[in-house]
Every structure is written in C-alpha cells, then in structure tokens.
Image (cartoon, rainbow, N blue to C red; front, side):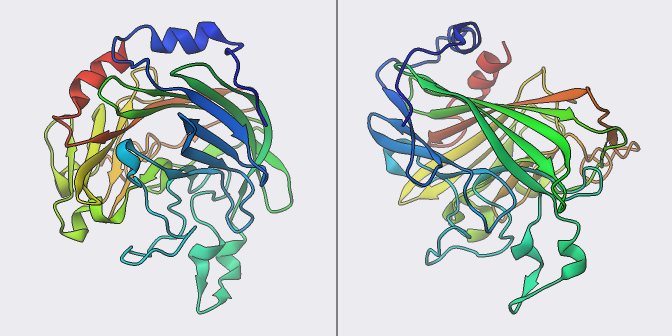
Length: 332
C-alpha cells in the first residue's frame, strides 16, 4: 500500500495546479496498491479509477473503471465485464488506454481478442502483436485535492525484446464545478534505431465512453469539438479539444479530451466515432487528417516525443461544463 504523502516533485505537480483557479480544495485523494497489484486512485475514500497492469488477457495497461461525478460509470465495461445493453465490439477499446497500431512493425492497439473468431485465433495477425509490459511505479502519491501517478512500461516484441519505452505521468484533481480531471503525459522514448511510428488510423490515447453516451445508442449522445463540428463531422479535424456527452443513468454526463499546445503535433487529428470511441492521434496525418504527409515518424534511440492531454469527466454538456474555458486554463 502506498502512503498518502506530499509529492516529492512539487515543482511539477503544483506548477500544473496553481496556474489555474479552476481547482477545488474539498476533495481528498489517496492512492493504494491493491492486492491484485493494480493501483487504485480514490477520492474521499471512494474509487475514482484503477490503473490496471495485471490483466494477462490483454497486451496493454489501462484505466478502468472511471467513475465520474455522482458515481456515474463514464467508460464502457466491455471486455472487462459483461454489462447488459452495452455494445460489445472492438474488445481492444479498454476504457482509457494508449496504443499504436504499428511501431517498428508491432501492434499494441489491437490484441489477441481482436483476432479471435469462434474461439480460433488468426495466428498470422497475432504474430504482429507487441505488448506494453509494466516495469516500474516511479511514484504514486497524494496530498489533498491532487494525486500523481508516474509509471513506466516497455513496449516489447513477442520474443521479449524492448523496442520502445514509455513514461506515463498522470495528475489527478477535482475542479470547482465537480468535474474529475486526469492530466496525462506520455513520453515515448526510442530504444533501438530504425523504429518507425507508422501513421496508422488506430493509434493514440483513447477513451471508449459509456455506451448510453454514444451517438449510435440514439439516446441523445453527441460529439462536439472546439470548432463546433458535431458527430460525424468531427472526425479527422485538427482541433484543441473534443467532447462526448449524453445520458448516463438518467443524467447528462460528458467526457472531454484536451490536447496541450506542447503536445507532439498539436493540434492533434481526432479519430472520433459515433459508436463511442475517441482518440487523439497525432500520427495518422494522412489516414485521419486527410493531409498529404502520412505522418510516419522515426523514433531513434535516445530520441523521445511527448503527448500531453487533459481528460475531464463532467456533468452536463460541454457548455455547462465550461470546456472552452477549461481549455484556456489548461493551455496556459
């Protein structure tokens, strides 16, 4: 179990939070190592989210569940649990996760379940799968209305060779309006020369929202971006933020993802779908954004790129949650 102590990196954590008045001071965060080995993040003693590293069915680390204001379940439960009424497509869309369809020839977006039909696995496709291997908790600390989790994982081939290394820093807080916030920074570091991050459609930081919230559920769910593009028109646009909102347990709830100006290739193209997925994908400049450049990027040994996003789990639509104002605070 981790102790609830003051952060050892106050220059980073407090620098993030004190630049904005958009912060509440009533919540009390704690972080615990669970018996399973996963890491639970709690607000006032109740689970907010869990960083899952021990799931051997998948090839990735992910956050699930994510519990929003008022106890709303903000992301889809499948394939971690079977919930009546949920659409059970794309089993690799695990709540909040990150993956790359092709980095050095290996795929951490899809997984074995993706390539399984009627109990049989497509072995040729399975051979392309890499794995995100959790290696270290650098820090997991909480103090008042903030918490920080810093973890490392290696991207490895099926033979166990490391071809890329990730450092993930997630800062948590509760905003004045009750929104629950995750600031996610992912540093991708090259380990071997000749590793290309290929500009494929299925790559990036992703959220699979609660099914009732998605447009295809036809319960009032909608997609809106910072330019005002809605639903299908939001796909592929390069904009600072996107919001997905709709009903959850009878109340309008939403998930916004903001792309920081310091993030790789800001503003990112958005791979956002009416069935409930939205992904910040700065790699697929051609396949998603429709540009001439395919977006391939060579990540040489010793070189790194940084992806920075804010996830806001909120009540109401994007206007009630003041996502445009939240973007201004985050960008500064």
